[in-house]
Image (cartoon, rainbow, N blue to C red):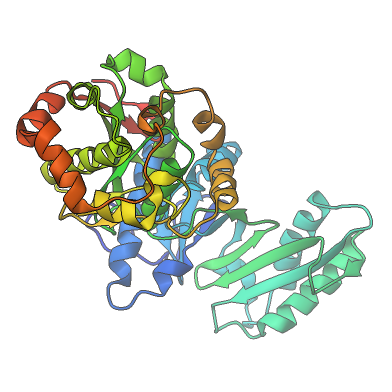
Length: 430
């Protein structure tokens, strides 16, 4: 029986019978998906496809299966030393809440011939793990998840037995059930038992591709990369759009703040395109204007440009890193004036976040250090004494005078568009 999950195939439960060898397995938890109803299997398949593509990209053609709300990756015996590298990459796949590298025990080794628990085999695994992870004078606990209800003991009984065994056979002595220094996990599933000493935190959320397609406006600042990540985390396929202060060549973009942000974010979005368009024609059209509305006029131009591209890409929404009241362009009046020129939804996942919260997320993602590097951010260049309040009527009047042929302006702007594609943090060769 095959246990690999290929695209457009259903999720297959791991069998209890003999299967491909591999006593090291990566066990993946995805609680957001288990909350789904009748379409849960669709989300499981989407996640499995994401995992498969990422492993293939790393050169690991490993079997993937499922067991009771978990995805299981079977690591071949000859590649067990590479499990940690694979796990560190899988941490960045949306949909995976946590993961662990586990030792696996076949169901036939968990019970003896009388269908009683085979404490010798089970004990050997838990004791070996405990000895390997020993911390001097530290406390421990055993946490058992018993999904296989055919076992003749409860999870509490199993945890007690294994805890006693650890105390007898190792230097661990202090048991603390509440917030121990070390937790030893045992997942008793129908396809066998899994033993692991730690869980790695994942992104969580939903698999990329299950939440629709969006175009994220990437400015080069701290906020917009975080906003793009949050939509990828909710299952969206994310592409990036940037308005540059000058005409840039591809090589210039690759080495720029924007190019490096797009590359880093693609570790989470998996595969994204970065579209860079110069706003020089807009800048020239407003040359000499000093009304205080230049920044909001620019943001209206940005929204119109983004909507035009998003429509061509069949995206369903725009994504912006706005935080209400953070700067002059993000007052409620100016946000409304900027939004009213497009019909496409604008998603603002950071609208209620404080700056320190956004910075914390950016540091966690790894985008913060890139975002604070010197860069000609378009909004900063245009922000000369900006007005904090605007109206659609007043801005429309200014556009009629200074930008009388908007379609022509957009057409000229997009003639100089540059596109780069990134996959898992790397630029895709043409």
